[in-house]
Structure formats: structure tokens, C-alpha cells
Length: 94
Ligand SMILES: [Zn+2]
Image 1 (cartoon, rainbow, N blue to C red):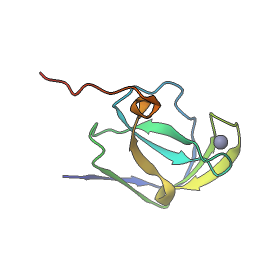
Image 2: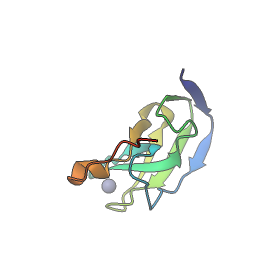
Image 3: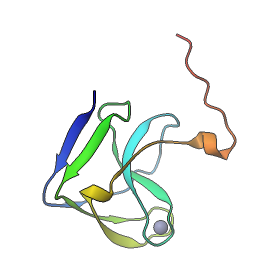
Image 4: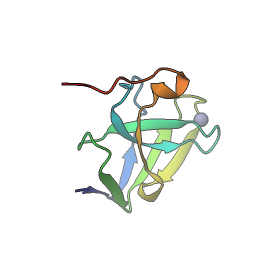
């Protein structure tokens, strides 16, 4: 089941500084350096969210500092992947 998240209007967004490995986030891929960064926590916590609408986001890339404008349709849903740096995320066995 996926949740639709609709954005309208202009957002002055700030990239999230600290990401929890394994958590899901909404963000963008920087137009300048192509790093992916997060601007919002995924409210569903599962990645089952679909950003939509005509919202526009002004946000500075936390990696290179480039200020860019993104549209809601460019928004990425991604899981913070410290795992990419060679660290395995242990699946919880609760
Ligand atoms: Zn950048």
C-alpha cells in the first residue's frame, strides 16, 4: 500500500544533516554533484510513498552547497544506504 504525498507551492527546504542508516527519506539528486540528499523523513517509514503535485523546492546541496530548484516530480524516495560504504545493515530479528 503506498501513500501519495502531494506538494503544492514553493518550499524553502533544508537538507537533512544526519540520516539514520536503513531509514527511508525523500530527497533529490543534486544537479551539480549528483549526490543524493534527503529533505524529509518518509512518513510511512517503508519507502511506500509517492511524491506528487506541482510543488517546487529550493534547497542547497549539503555535499557541494549548490543552491538548486527541484520539482516534486524529481523527488526520490530512498533508503539511507550507509550499507553502500561497505557496512551491512543487519536485518532486525525481532
Ligand atoms: Zn551537490
